Amino acid sequence: MNTANNLDSVIEPLLTGLVSKRPEVRVDWAYTELKEGIESGQWDDHLDQIRERLSGYLRTDKVWTKALSARLLNALAEAGHFHYEDYLTFRAWYVTEDDTRGIVKDIGPIMAVGYGADYVETCVRKGMIPAVEGAAIISCRLRAPGGVWHDDEGLRLARAACTTIGKSTSTHILEIWIERLSNTVLTEGVRNNNRAVVENFARFLKATAHMVRSAPEKWGIDAERAELALPMISELEQQLRNASDYREAAP
Image (tube, rainbow, N blue to C red; front, side, top):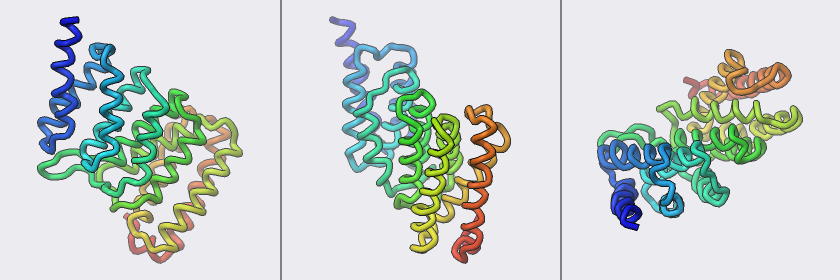
């Protein structure tokens, strides 16, 4: 009983520390200690308390806290503590978050898009969500509001995409996903003149194609899926190149 109380007196300040705007408090102390405790099993008797707080934070207005909450949900999932209701709360936030800043002076890492992508990748890889759900949330994030990404967000989302390709139960699902990317993301980016969506989509496609081409086995992508995915990704890239907005915005 005393041990539990002692742990509670330690964990509560850490959870509160996630709200801090100061990176040395929020990231270097609170996040690091919570993650290490999750991985070691130190917080096993307090997982419900942690999960409840993280889900609550995802409904608040502090993006740096929401992003770290997603990062800690990822740590929980990697440790085998996945709960679908937590994922649903995360999903509702992730596909609508419009603060897409990466590393920010005086605040440190925000990385909402990148940390969220890591969580999606883990959930798909471990079979916690089906590949078709991974494809859906990636598509939603690609056309979501926000600015141009500058801190490897496209790379992280590409990792989630490659895992999704590898976990797809049929090539038909992959074909439908690529078609949906064309119909929805391209529509939002090119036809609606959304420069950020166009640039982000271009970076995402480039990173995804490179991963599928260079190390498909790392993502569990067999030859059939790689041979199907690469031409379709190239076609999407060509559609972007053919758009005048893309020619002006391409990195």
